[in-house]
Amino acid sequence: MKGEIFNLFETFVSENFGEETFENVYDASHPKLSTQDPYVGPGTYPDSDFFTLVTEAVSQLGITLERAAYAFGKYCFPKLVAKIPGYIDQHDHPKAFLLTVHDVIHVEVKKVFQNAQPPEFSYEDPSENELVMIYRSKRKLYSFAEGLFEGVAEHYGVPIKVNRTVISEQDGICRFELTFGTS
Ligand code: HEM
Image 1 (spheres, rainbow, N blue to C red):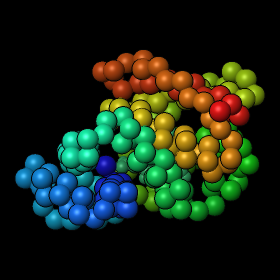
Image 2: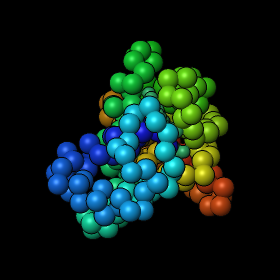
Image 3: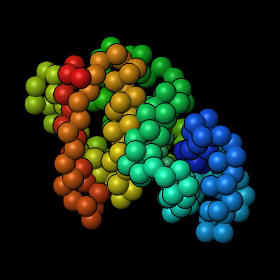
Image 4: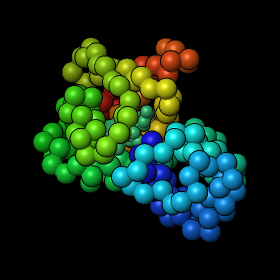
């Protein structure tokens, strides 16, 4: 996972729960982390470090992993958009934008962030106000993805209803059925 995401996680926890909370989370996680130095944006670090920090934060804050991942996804969306300016403004509806995430956005991400491994998405387009995105990643960050969808909805001012079905827990395959314009 890119250092960029670790840094966003630090600002997310610090802004919402205070810097001291993040320091406590970091200190408690430190012995289990593979990296003793601070995470830097361009670096790439083991996913396990990210999950160690998230698990510790969730346990200290007494919130569920699902809720934390969703809130973090929603928080990340505008910050990620700012990393590759010019792409989101090319579209005036969330569906048009989401259709570019696999072939354009995450392809660009891999150029900008060396060694980035964003998830794979394939699509089905059943009707004008619906879109199916099939997610595949061993990280299984389903709630994080749902938080990002909420970020997209807020950006365009178009509500997105999300229906999630896990296809393979083992392989991390999940089907997101999206309906636009219904709250
Ligand atoms: C301009 C918009 C976006 C940018 C710049 C962006 C960028 C990134 C970056 C840098 C990562 C980290 C990859 C790594 O650490 O190796 C990531 C991961 C991810 N992205 Fe995107 N992303 C964007 C939009 C989206 C959208 C709309 C979705 C749809 C849900 C999405 C789904 C995900 C997920 C779920 C991950 C977590 C990694 C995983 O599950 O394996 N992204 N993205």
